[in-house]
Image (cartoon, rainbow, N blue to C red):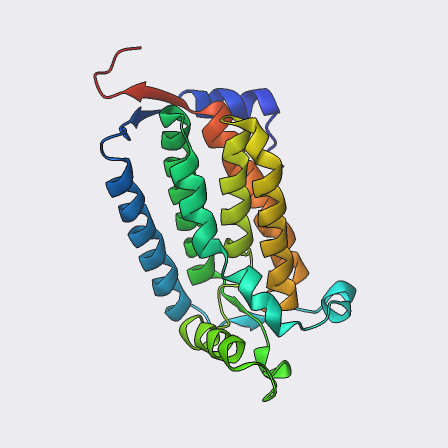
Length: 227
């Protein structure tokens, strides 16, 4: 069995170097392109799989967590969460690291979804007809646009936690607020019955690993190639 020490892993990634290219002038354009690319990757993997998606076994916590349709509002709050993180980041070096880490996280997750797709039995949790019309519309639209595949690891969970972690290096006072927000979104993936608990755990661990690699190990250089 091949194993590597933390020092060996750090040395491997520290040998890599990525260019810093996001500036105050192109920040908005880059953010828009990042959103477009991430959406395209996810939508593609959501509808194309090498093998049929498989249902995972329920853990006790999956059965214990109630189905709370109203929590779909927490679930979709990620569409506000990401712009809030991106545009409130002030350190451009940190923002470049976030760009690369976020794009890598999306790409790795999509690769897993295509090769090893998993699915959730949403049919066990139908929307009640007495649900308020707006919540019913939002939830049913979400289920129509986002298939039950792409479960493990939860990209919803990994992407929000990774985004909150950037405030460990920039404006640390904001980290608790964004971490709590990302945790509420993570919990909502269970209460909306979009994900299994194992998806949430795997998503969190993936976010932690990707953050550590891109924000702690990999070196960055400016476009003028100066050290």
